[in-house]
Image 1 (cartoon, rainbow, N blue to C red):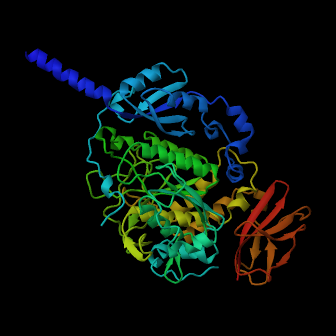
Image 2: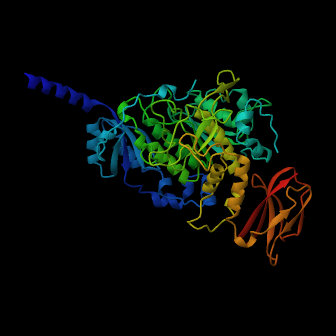
Image 3: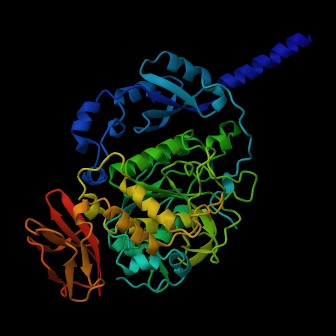
Length: 559
């Protein structure tokens, strides 16, 4: 009888197991249409996305190619399998079904390379112990020439010397930021976003959770986050990049924590890339799920295990500056950063208070493979945000807000001379750093504890005045050495400056002056000794001296 009882129990358990719906990804073998798409990139990418790749010398390759629709249709037609999402970068389809059905379909489908289950004990890589953690997603969003009057945002902008960037006219104009979050209710009506709406700075968006074009829905977290970058109330509130343009993408379903949200995030990042976005901010992170069998361990925080981190790394390799919150787990049992903050290319941001002391909730690094995370910090204790219900200015805590503050200023810095310098270098050795690497290095090395990083403080709090000068200097060093001694005097300049330090014959050299948006405001076909610019408005400009493949760009501050 005991044996029969045991057998009966086993059969019940097996029956329940065989019926349980599991999340998994099918990774496909090929993209048969790759040659067609790569030879006709406008079929899959906007011109702005192509320009960004050209400027950063990033090749268009098979990861840009859409997935083969016949493969997807084949999977959709399978009985017992539901397609929930997909990623062209990873050539993967997110599905649900029982383990038995998924395994059988995989074994009988030659176009599928491998299957990965969200429950890692099912994967063929071998079972490993998974740390069982209590899901904490319910609290993931909360822990109890230009001269702006910053009002309530003064601390969060001036702590990072963002006001210096703004004073140089670097306010995010010409940059496109994608905010990937949990929803954006009332952004279409609140006074604090009126400036964005009237200036057509909200370029569009999408609700990936509901598969809807109504992205002004969902959880208010995204509204609060957006306000720290693009919100504006005259003399009361100024976002970190008030003149940037935005795409708003909802990928997070706030009431639940499920693996599908990782896939939706990657879908949104792919959409952002195809639209030519410069910066992504995401104040989200994943380590635990409603189904504890899907939980990640600290060992998984290595930048290459989780689906979302793999996608974030590809986004970085496409030339997007991805900025992510470190997480708010510093004072609980899971104290570490979460995915995708562990990805190598992601700029991970922790939180401090107004006295520059670390917030106790700010998550710890390093990554499980020993890399410094978070790299940098911004205000995340009593940060000023816009309340989504009444539009009032509120104070809120979390790395959810330190991240977008940082993302906005990084967009301002990225716009300083981006197109001008990046387009002027046609032959760059593979050994040279990418422009985004120069930018990140400039920001990191400007931080107050760069020489002595710690697991929670990282490199510390950046100084964007220092970072701007470092970035201009490091990118200028990529120009041809024959022009490296050229300088202008005086600088700052009021009416006339001299071009000094030029060695040799000036024949064949021309000169151009551009504003911060890359618009040409002066051109001379000969290289003059003196240049008169009294007609220019006060602000930041760039002098470009060129001859064939030789270029030199010099910053001009016009008083």
